[in-house]
Picture (cartoon, protein in one colour):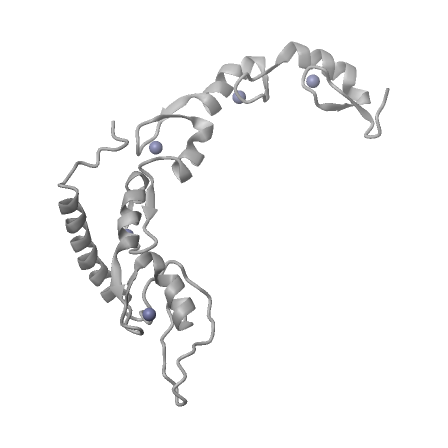
Length: 202
Ligand SMILES: [Zn+2]
Ligand SMILES: [Zn+2]
Ligand SMILES: [Zn+2]
Ligand SMILES: [Zn+2]
Ligand SMILES: [Zn+2]
């Protein structure tokens, strides 16, 4: 029976084949194609080994050395490799993903003096604090205009940045962050008695 697309489903590869080609296809398909047990793709029997090498061979990740299927390598590099580079949202330092949870926990717990209300605010609360309490956004110069109003017009939020009014001081800010982070790391390692961070190693 011919369906409305003018074809029928091949019982071997489950594709819809036009009626005119069906008989020829069915013979050819059964004789020459096989289903890849790994990905379900229909592959020419003579190319099965080649297909396996191309998509399913295990290759070592250049960063963590784990053996990864070729076709999974991009996903592994992007969001699974424990050694992939991640950026701390608080201090913008880059580090391997396996260190980022611990780092961001402590980095987010560091406090900075809020120059607008003179309170110490953790990095984790900083964005919400600036927006909710002071009504401005990061990367925004806060100007006290003639009427003394400190309310700033809304601008787009950049979660990459921290600290208000630093638009032009990026380099200086980086230096400052380096010093602050150095101190934080020292405190953290002192606190933990310099225990080795061997999690996920080997
Ligand atoms: Zn077929
Ligand atoms: Zn396959
Ligand atoms: Zn890896
Ligand atoms: Zn950080
Ligand atoms: Zn404040």
